[in-house]
Length: 186
Image (tube, rainbow, N blue to C red; front, top):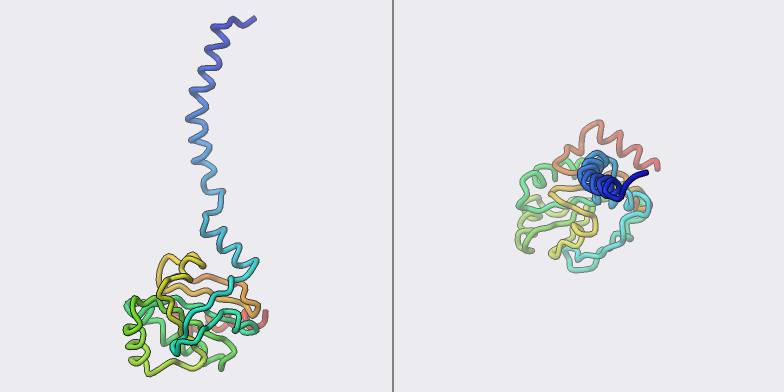
């Protein structure tokens, strides 16, 4: 039979070993749990992007829901972001390729409206099939979980997330066209 001293020694040893084992187990299983960003993307794929409304260049409200029925690229960018500026022409060529069957909702994160207007003027105006809105309060960053610019959210016709693409892309390449052919067919 175990004496009370022996029992106490077992309990103390178990308690002392429990702490490092707990930390070790936490370390081993850390990669098994999805990150908050992954959970957010999973939610956007399943339930769609929540509707939001921002002012267009003319000051009139523009809502995401008004584009339901067409694939949409929500492109978060700013005129001060060099990769954003660099990818802008290839986005324009992408939507030209699809003759308006795809819409780009270009969400500007410029700090002031003058910078946005100067950018649009430098590019010769708003390209066809682009809708440009100004998100001065960065509500889309919080809504979508954006952590860098540019970021693009490719949405299906029912406004569910198909893919999040971070960083500068060449949107006018054959691989991109094949991808969007598939998005169009959904």
